[in-house]
Length: 104
Image (cartoon, rainbow, N blue to C red):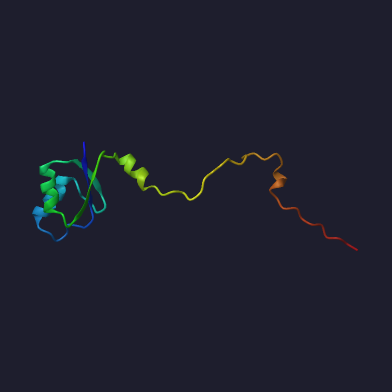
């Protein structure tokens, strides 16, 4: 079942109350929030009423909040191949060796 992915891109501040009411009916309260609604003529009509304020795309599956958050998480830029042992055999290995002053 296809869904509309609707993201509020612009604020409704200063617009008529009818426009704000349509956004509230769609479940859009803050900028950059995304909601999913099943494709239907009623939802399409609501989208057309606020088409200047929202970005719409059609997707096959609606995502949960947890899935959307995971999609926004950036790639760390590195990969951990193996962990270094947390317990070293000799703690002196961490300290640099001091050179002794020679007295001639």
